[in-house]
Length: 70
Image: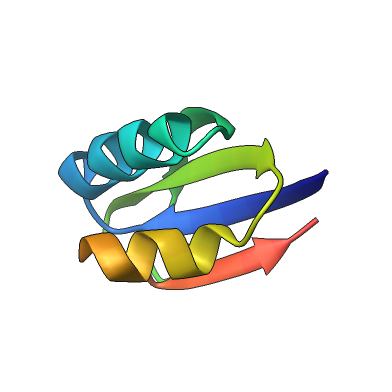
């Protein structure tokens, strides 16, 4: 099982991304995260499952600023 942290700029993309990942067999949840650059908040999707979260999100058109496998 692989685990990911996926940073999005809006809560809308975080919610859509979480739901798409869940539909693809991932366990996923959202956390609010402060921005390091002082430009407001961002959101992090923490997901775990088999497969590649990045590929699933890109095919669904979900925008994210970074993804980290943990």
